[in-house]
Structures are given as C-alpha cells and as structure tokens.
Amino acid sequence: MASNGNDLAQTISPAHYKFRNGIETIDYSLAVCEKLKGNEAVCVSNVIKYVSRYATKGRPEADLQKAQWYLQRLIVEFNKGREQ
Figure 1 (cartoon, rainbow, N blue to C red):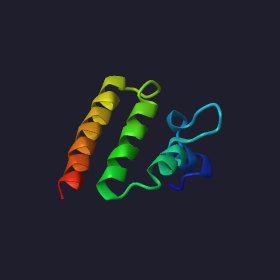
Figure 2: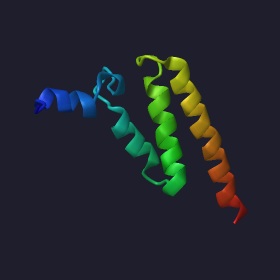
Figure 3: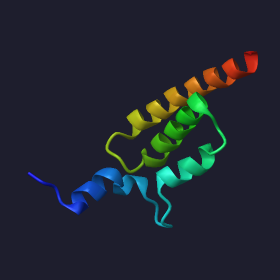
C-alpha cells in the first residue's frame, strides 16, 4: 500500500520536532553542530533532539534519560580528544 505525501512528511518531520516559530530541531541541531566533528557532533545532536522533544512525546522521562546518556558520552568524547 502506497503512502501519501502527508504520511511521509509526518514521518520525516513530526510535530514534536517543530516549534511555533518555524524552527525544526534538525535545523537547529545542524547549526549548533556545524563546527563539531565526528562523535562530538553526534552526541550534541542527540542531546538536542531528546531534550527538545521530551515534553511533547509520549515518554518524557525516557527521552530525558537518553539525553543524559548522550551528554555523558559527550563528556567522554570531549575528554578523549583533550588527552591526545
């Protein structure tokens, strides 16, 4: 069964990633991570994603725990880069 354009748009850009001023989480994340590299960019992007949606998605505590995990991993990656 083929899906229509609205289904695809909701899958790619669901409401919990959009804010009333028109900014989408992906655009904000790309701007913040623009000068970061590799693992640090991945971790920061995921922290932004989970923190930005926790209040509007079904399992807020789970999203905050995921953000915390990525933040802790970011600290590890940050320190790894400074040791070399």
